[in-house]
Length: 139
Image (cartoon, rainbow, N blue to C red; front, top):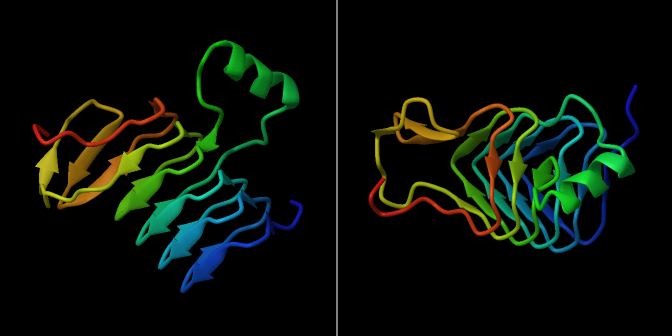
């Protein structure tokens, strides 16, 4: 049994939000599925995507350890944009990340944290994307 999702001053349309999620103020979610225990920062945009969520909630000690190690916590950092993407479980996406496929690349990557298959961006399970990460033109 999980607590209900918490959010205020967000825009959610044509989407499903599972239990245990925390969604920051100013976030926009459209045509997406948000899995259990998703931690989504402020002013995030999620469109046409599936976020699988997390296996567990992070403790305050784990969040502090992530901060000390200069590593994003599990979830989606503030001001990130995720479009047309499948994000597997327990991913750490830093603030300001841009995960989308504006060049409509059909296939890219093999053993990387982010791959593209049939034009769909897939973020691998437990991937860590640093703050400001984005798909480069050379991809």
